Length: 335
View (cartoon, rainbow, N blue to C red):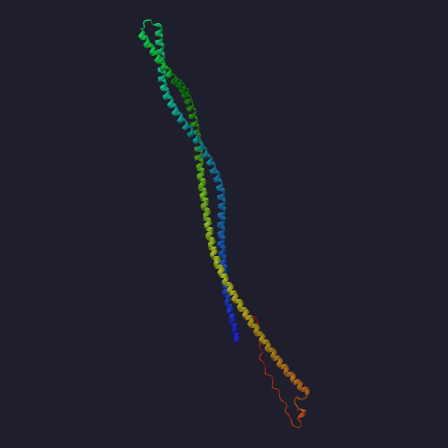
């Protein structure tokens, strides 16, 4: 076997090894793609579950917001009735203070009235005595006149206090009526507040259930999202391995192509060489045939006789050496 043939066989063998390697790599690549697809499918399933729960969460959140608005309105009602009750009670405290003050004044007024009435009666009695009694001495009369004068002076001093007492009495009566009305209003406001508090307690139970379900949906959504991220991460890891293996596959394909191109170039060169050699051999045979034919035509060469110009001297016919059988070279065919 020639060196060229040996090189050709080695190249074919190396190409076969590369093809086996490529086939193994492509099988592994197919498995990686299938595994990556499984992780993608798992990620998609988790994403669908997450999106579905998020949609439920959104609807539930709207329901929760509506309920929270209702509860806020109830609490506002409680606040309003409580503030009204407290305001009325505060006004009532002021009235109670005025009432105590009026009663104190009334008690004082009673003593003023008693004094006024007593003085007034005494003045009338003394004056009547002075008018009707004829036995009163001059000194005694003067003393009684002086006493009446002082008593009238005191009466004049008591009159403004007596008028004030009359006004206090009227105001006291009004305060008591006002307090009674305000107490009823305060009781009504407190009653309404308690009714709204009861409603708030009922709504709080529903609200607790809504909050609990909201937390459950959020936890489930987070769980599926974490699962989605985990499967996505696995898919990305397999994808990275797939990309790296595809680079290696591309390199092996490049090597196979390079060897195939090299083998094709070698075969083309070899075949061209064979064709050239065959053409050279054919041209040599044609030249020899043409030379013999030309000598025969010129009479310089006779087949089996002598040449005329040789005279008596016999010239032996030159025997043509038999043609050496040429080795046939077969061109390489591309495998």
